[in-house]
Figure (cartoon, rainbow, N blue to C red):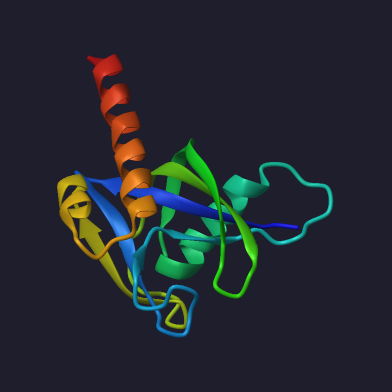
Amino acid sequence: MFVVNVEGAIHRNGKWLLILRNEKEYAGGSLSLVGGKCEIEGVSSDILERTLRREILEEVGIEVEDLRYVNSSSFVTESGINVIDIVFLCQHKLGEPYAKSKEEVDEVIWMTTDEILAHTNLPAFLKENIRLADKMLQDNMNLKH
């Protein structure tokens, strides 16, 4: 069995929203995208998108819109839990992000794509997710022009 996790690559004004995870959380003390695990709902629709919107609101107090699939991957946690991780590109809609869930988030940080890709302490999967999300944004902007 897998745990299903969703994450939002939230973009606003040329920067991406990252969180500094609380030390007590999984991957504590590291920077990551905002997100969380899907809960068992029985029969439902749009569970990934609803879960992501809920997690973003709970953790950083903002609303997002225009969710678009970026990437999916799997990994195994240090405790042996198999996780499927799905990343969505999100546009900031409403609110100013802050560390709303103190148990999960120590700080919110906005960084450009270049800052993230040049950062020496960020995991390769985070850089890849941002690179892919940034490419989607660039491709979308090129279509509009």
